[in-house]
Amino acid sequence: MRVTLNGEPQDLPDGLTVLGLLRHLKLDSERVAVERNAAVVKKARHADERLSDGDVLEVVTFVGGG
Image (cartoon, rainbow, N blue to C red; front, side, top):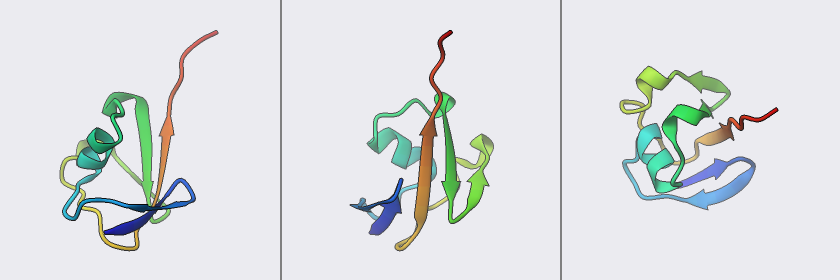
């Protein structure tokens, strides 16, 4: 499937969930926020929220420090 991820076209395996996307990208699901088609996907929905061809996704990684 083809999506737009952080402003860039990206080909992904079909049938991914948000959690599957984060694993595919090797990101820690506890340290990110995900927006799908201009709506924030709550962490509780990451395992259930299926991606679709044409989705527009924004993934933001939280970085600690001081």
